[in-house]
Image (tube, rainbow, N blue to C red; front, side):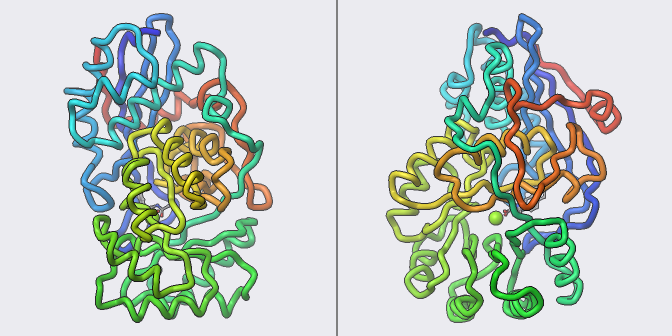
Length: 368
Ligand code: NPQ
Ligand code: MG
């Protein structure tokens, strides 16, 4: 397969409700789509999960677009015949840029699989036709507002709730949600690196709430502190921002800092590395689940394929399209009874609504 051109499109997608985390407030998603067209006219789609600002990781969407336009796309285009497995070696001269590389690899992989008529879940080794999903609930102005938000998601059938926490918004909201909905709802929390060594004692008090896991309490490169907390808590410690590859995942697990792993293809450089990370975690007997980055239907479809792998034993942050967007750029994903069907079509398995994409486009460039 030869790539003839790579199109980079920016879309502005307003969120249905503001989403607050410990690293800030998001009201609109600045999406970067990578569209790879082969010399046979087959089109593959990739979605870059970088945020508008480098507040979740070092990457940000303007930077990712420039890196793809100037370095990554030219390297793939110059290579002639390629497969998705060639993208990482072809772009390894450029350090880091995992979210940018992941978007390019995803577009090439989608084009490759559409060319041969193979489905992504099948290609990755998926074993499930449906996957359990959860929802991530942002920090609210009041605890009462949080309880109402959680109630609406439970009414929609979500069985796993993730609460964003930060210093000053942790024990009280968790208490209120447990008091309001009882011991049976699957509940977990995510701190997005907001805590410090001085918070160790406070965090251990979360053991009272029978949480599924505590996600990324400390800085992304502080494995020691995560390992110390893991020693002192019953609640499993889950890492997100810290895990940038299968290798860093093995290191974190061996350090006792990672008892459950959040896998995001964009954070580790693509779905091929995400599968390797899944295999490492399985080999070390560590459960994994699929994290979310407020993807459109394009990234959501691919995440469902990934979550079909055997080691994904916990509900993922792969919520319905309506959790974030009034109207998606694919047919909407709708959870039923807390689960969603894994797309079965070729490639990522969904059709993209070109008209909707055109309506949301703020800029477009084609690299040849
Ligand atoms: C997490 N995701 O697990 C991230 C954080 C996050 C679903 O909580 C735009 C794009 C806004 C990606 C806000 C969830 C975002 C974003 C929060 C990711 O840590
Ligand atoms: Mg997280």
